[in-house]
Length: 265
Image 1 (cartoon, rainbow, N blue to C red):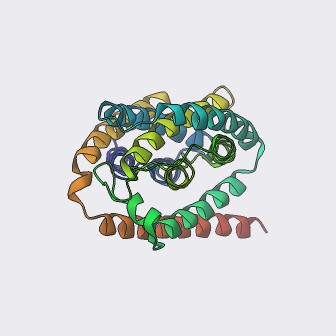
Image 2 (cartoon, rainbow, N blue to C red):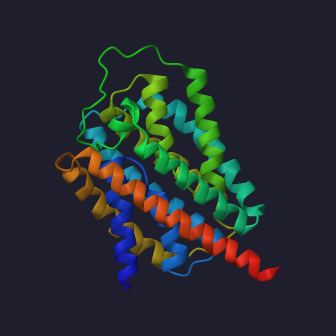
């Protein structure tokens, strides 16, 4: 078993378990740059791995009462439909365009992580964070939740990101959820959307099932560990470390893709 599979799988699980997001941002580059998987199969396999890992982590949060199933139904179903459509679009797009879009999303995610403010500050607290909890939640804005689900879903399908770094702030702002419930609900939504995206790619791109199975198993175990240790790590350290990681990987991806394009010109 490759050490890269263990490291990448563990990183994916820890990101999801601690932050409620970030799984695909680790998984997809790992498949491409560490494990030599072609971009489109890497996107499909990333969606499958993140779907499994997020789904099991969501069960952990559900047992603690931190999943709002009404919002999962609205956001998740509309998001799943958008993700399936985005996956069908992604099959037709050039690999380089998909990877550049992915890198730009990583820059946006890094900005979200380091931007000051109550939503960003709470988002890094993980499953054990209670910062930003709101006992006086406003009425749900169903249309906004559904539209956001579709938009994030299409993005998920095209570039293979679960969208947790967008979903968590949206759930706090649009639904008035506290951070614990927003993270748990986000994981359930990510699982639904990721499975829909995987279904959109399945049959159209080759899947390395043994590699995906091992990667998923390691990520699931790490996800449990991440959920247990999240409350022991200061939110500021989590956010800043993750933001630096995103900036480094995104810059490397852009460098690789720009170099590849230049080589053909």
